Image (tube, rainbow, N blue to C red; front, top):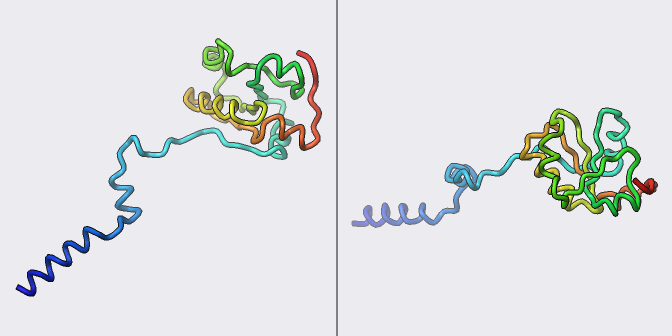
Length: 144
């Protein structure tokens, strides 16, 4: 009887042990699996280094009014809130490198996510947006 109680106690104790990382990974459902993302965030210094390459596309996803108030030289304006944003993205060259920014980083992160879902190969998001870029001493150009 004592042996039976010991076996029962040992079995019960194993049920109460915390799951290991391997146990948790083995029981993950596909919906819980982390999504892969192709884009990454970059700071102003890395952004400026990348921007020097004539082959990259600088994509400003702010409104036309924000763009006119001040934008990076050579940036293309494509308002993420505009009606043809997704349609325009779908027609863009997915093999190019895109540097994407907005005012502070929220809209551009969403744009990068959309670009991820469309399988763009290399997309970089400016952390802090044009606000961080200006705070680092860079001067935007005005107008269209």
